[in-house]
Length: 311
Ligand code: AMP
Image 1 (cartoon, rainbow, N blue to C red):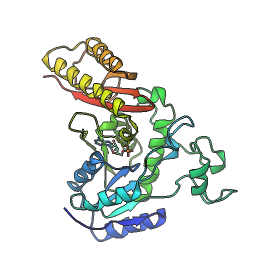
Image 2 (cartoon, helix red, strand yellow):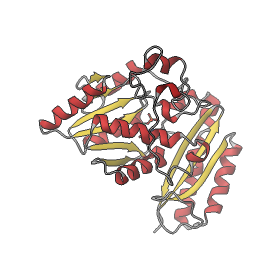
Image 3 (cartoon, rainbow, N blue to C red):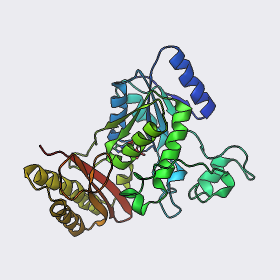
Image 4 (cartoon, protein in one colour):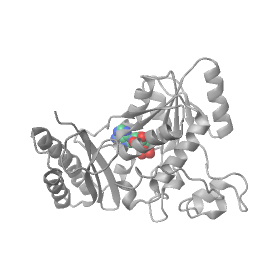
């Protein structure tokens, strides 16, 4: 469906002013933060946001604060023109695309402007003392497990940039994908603990027809690894099916899943069944849980999960 042309805003002051003007006119603002290279998963969050608000802001910002120096910040895929076309044609359209240059540059750098430095030298803002950024938001327990084990600064970067974006965009509702389950729960907890007046919604995972969870990183998979990576969603589906049939012993679900992914050529970072709110591992399924997996296929680290409820 063809629809409206989004306004592109790059300045944070302009973004904040725009939201305040819209709110003064009686509108409610939905917000979908992304790192770009958009796919149907991202677009589904916009559709979800429309169920709650009448105006939608989408941000596109690859956040250096969540990447370690050895991670894929510099090669993270981007295609602004492609993204813009998708945002133009999604459902009821999008009102604003907010794409700030550098949210860690406060205009006091010694050399060049912040965005140049960000593109050329900065591997992650964590490493760049010159940026002068030193305030971080940590969700202390939820950030420790699952992805937090192998990516120790990841969630403080996520929580911090989402705080920044919330303070700039000032939305009523923000929508996150359950694809990044731990991220969704961390943002929910942060919003509760820090009294943000924002409703956080978790939206269902969108998959390719063959089951692979959509991700901007999928484009970096070789055709062979793309095929092998299907083992993740297969392993999760089998486990969910077994659990719903009565297998509540988590070891009996996790071990075959690891085996299936490993035999397909994946390197499992973690495979854990955790309680849905605390994200604490469980041994026996008694309450709603989520089976979370991260695995490497070649140079690409993929995450996926499935919620499991038994009656
Ligand atoms: P990203 O651009 O990867 O940072 O993702 C931006 C938002 O889109 C996050 O809330 C993700 O959880 C969400 N997202 C990414 N992939 C999917 C997917 N396949 N289904 C639903 N949401 C997704």
